[in-house]
Length: 251
Ligand code: PEP
Image (cartoon, rainbow, N blue to C red; front, side, top):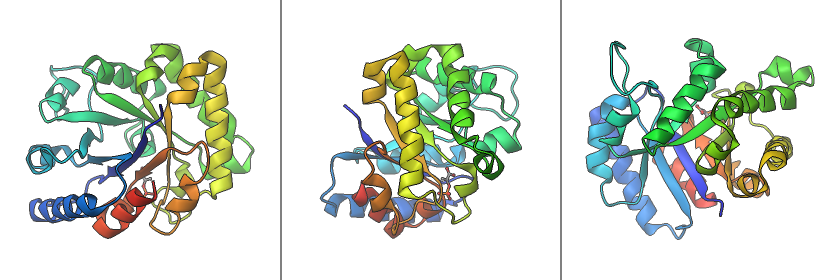
């Protein structure tokens, strides 16, 4: 069965006091929300994981990491591994976000290594795939997105997707205020699902495919109404409790 997920990617934002305020608002909001069928996942900067773990204990709100190194330990200055993250109750990991692909030059191969390493530690990878504006305008949306997906499948095998999440995030829509229309997003989500169905029908039917790219309180419902959209990966709007709770309620 597909799970509806609403995932907060705080990116490199927040300070201790703000984190507590935001989490308190989410905990209060989620208690009074009628929506219990969807899962909320918070991915803070790693530095705040101890605080978030304490403050979210027994709330049912899951914790994720924005990044990790594929090795569990070693001479990798500045990095953290999935085994460490498990100690902070991380159960999800954003993998292959376009900011990591572009700014930190992460390759498909490295992304696939992280995907596999996350699963070894029972962390569910949320694999991000998406096209640039130029690729969309050249009619390369599907080939780009499916190519990124195939690159990981070639390394880890289709079976690994039985316990994974995919996030379709058009790069031109991330942090820009431009959102794919519900129809544009649905078209790509359906293409992803039918690509997977050719490899494994069961996985295709059961995997959650999230949409990400300027999801806000005022566009979430129309996106979630689409049959192949199973939730959202939310950047900017996840830093505002009211906005984020409205998106969560829409899921
Ligand atoms: C993201 O960072 O994954 C994202 C979708 O950001 P935003 O919601 O701000 O576009």
